[in-house]
Length: 191
Ligand code: 5GP
Image (cartoon, rainbow, N blue to C red; front, side, top):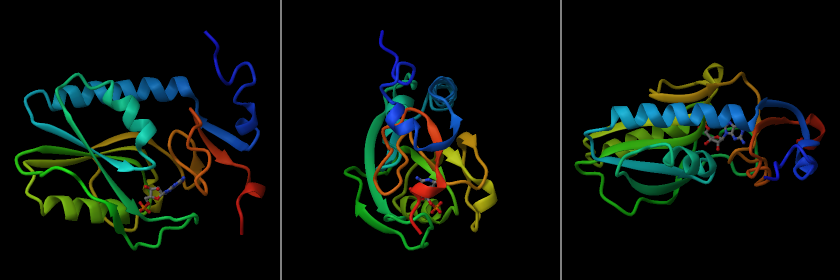
């Protein structure tokens, strides 16, 4: 098998990183743990996974395949960041769900919880649609950046106050395809 990253095929992108926080193997192991936990917790439930576009797609694709249940899947897209690295706190729905939440055990899957403002809005919005239950799973969390109180039920990794890319997370729509999580070199961040 050809292993990307070891033979140089992904070195273009790796050269843009100041630091790697989590390598692919570590991520995969943690995602499998989360999937196993969710499988246990939702064994007798009516699970609907709600993926938040676009950042959560890579995490979601791996997580889904670690959940051994007859789940349903839907997507929402909200705007929070644009091309900047600071949250505005203003959340706009760009794409809404296709199915009703009534009677469903909804699990929101996010890429990262930073200030918590996006998630707070999502939780309020989805709770009003009368789900049976509502929980949150995020790949990353930056507890030091939280400006609002919001409950997160499953967390892949907690990280310090650093802007990260990879595994679905972008900078100006780039770097989502990295199989690891890294911190960009400062000179590549505008402003
Ligand atoms: P919050 O509303 O919690 O401040 O921000 C949530 C959104 O901001 C995330 O879904 C993500 O799109 C973006 N975000 C927050 N921190 C980071 C980061 O370190 N890297 C990237 N690429 N996006 C981030």
